[in-house]
Length: 301
Ligand code: PMP
Picture 1 (cartoon, helix red, strand yellow):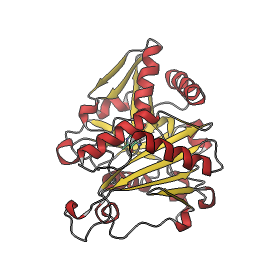
Picture 2 (cartoon, rainbow, N blue to C red; picture 1 turned 180 degrees about the horizontal axis):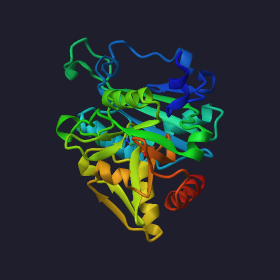
Picture 3 (cartoon, rainbow, N blue to C red; picture 1 turned 30 degrees about the vertical axis):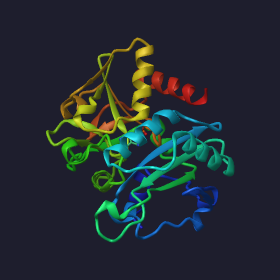
Picture 4 (cartoon, rainbow, N blue to C red; picture 1 turned 180 degrees about the vertical axis):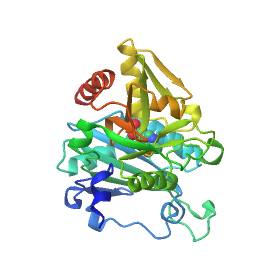
């Protein structure tokens, strides 16, 4: 095993399956007993959607926003789901209760369901709903304290007229290829551009930059996932009287930023120390530190 690859990437740790718990179409089970059909179109074709959700001190963070985004993703793919939001919330609560965790991560997956081998979605009569609860630590203490080293990947984000990145689908192959490129380059994360060459987001996080006291993030129309953490940061910044610009961002603007940071449910907030070898900052910037503190407070409320 290449030690370099293991240590240098933004990788998930401590997902010890004995402390994980699953819920499959209404049935709670241990991960070792969790089974999905090989005919499930989520498995065969990536035909499905998902949400990554965190709960802190037993309370799910922004569940309403996650369920709304899930519904939007399902609607974009015309997948029907037999559970109401109230039923999904109750299922998540049941899963949390059955686990020994007060704070952890829940992956909620809805696939087109079991069908025939062919691609035609009409062979799938019932969508499958699957949840996995697991502890999740996406970044190391070093990454939190020293910042992330990132590259701008040559793998482009898929355009909205191919598969809208707003839809959180089970197709993450281009994000995975970008992340692999970061790993091969010996850095932590990859920033992806759209087909026109403008900055969109990182492989699994949204991106913000600070320039002359302004907070800037690529507009959703650039083709990116409308992150729930991104929305929280925009709101927190506005409450602090900080001007937030959602606009087109060039790679040069990224290189020249005073601060760069990433946001996501899994990663939470992480600052970037270096882009393509260009130094951004060797320590957490002023605005990042302020927003990170406010965000942490929010999750503990
Ligand atoms: N972009 C991508 C591609 C992602 O996978 C994620 C993580 N779900 C994000 C951004 C961050 O979104 P959120 O804050 O809702 O987790």
